[in-house]
Length: 460
Image (cartoon, rainbow, N blue to C red; front, side, top):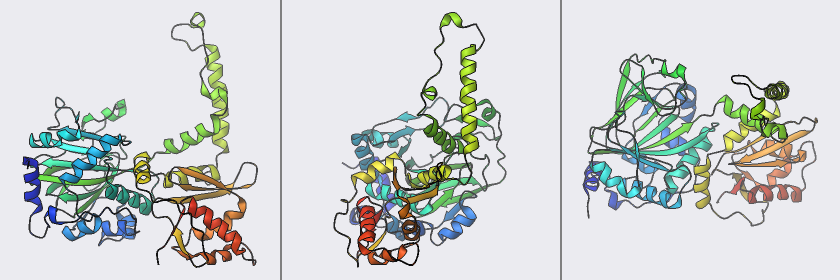
């Protein structure tokens, strides 16, 4: 049976220059080519994007049906949205949420829904949104963008389906967003620069710049702030168009067609607290004193006063904490490890889905003429520095994995990370000093990295 929603989507899809959905084969593209970011930003180069727009100001890129086809072969429509939501729901995919909202009055709260309610809710005029649905093409594209942007945070895949005349109200987000319009036409009204620097979450902004309501529990200083709205701009996006806006940009949307479907890559930047607090926790948690608070009997407590044993306990922990902080070097190995770990970690939701579509681990013996490269499926990084005992420490990162290596790997890895691809036997020349590695040594290194997923073979 064809529903009202299906008809709306089909009418919009069969516009001039846009292929009919049912005639386009779906390609379950799960290989990362290394060109995803370039294709998404074209004709803007990644270098120009990084230098002029990344984290600074919005960027609208006119695309079209051909660009959409290159990025997502077969396009992405309502049936993909429903199928991906249904699969994520049945698998209980990490981080998956699906919700609907008709208006943005305080009396009309966001409602979490099931995938079988999408059609009914949309037909009733609601915006439908999801995050982290299951789709191999979408999650592979997200992993590729994480790899090629090399930012120290995670990336979420969010979908928004809006009926004509509906959309999101004026608001700011804590995340950067790269939005790819998949179906229909949508209007964005937005500020040229962030109206709030690095908000802690999404905030709906009233016409006078004051917060109308928060998507989280605000602190008093947040409730008192007022955004400088200034001059606003407008663009209309169509299928294949890309719109990037950094955190803190005021924006509002409205669907201009019977339906509008957008795929949004939500880029979450970690804070300084995320880095330092996790590092301090890892360094101190082995001491049992940091795993509890003092047990104080009620008979020893005085109303409104801090018990002396608690005060003494705090004093001891603060002294230890001060020592740990003073021991940290800004460019030292400890903070470098945390930074490299953040670069490599794509987020639990992407890791879980990539694992489900992962290719079998390489087990064939590495031969001298094999062509290898660092894997494109996830960010690989490494950290080298001096340990507290004066020795050289080296760690490699892939996704959530950390592998500690011996010092003898240092010149090998330093060379390998600067190679786009390489012939296996050339690795014998990566030794420090005039003597090359014996082939058996280089082969052992390469075989280990290949079986662990850090390297992959390049088809000739």
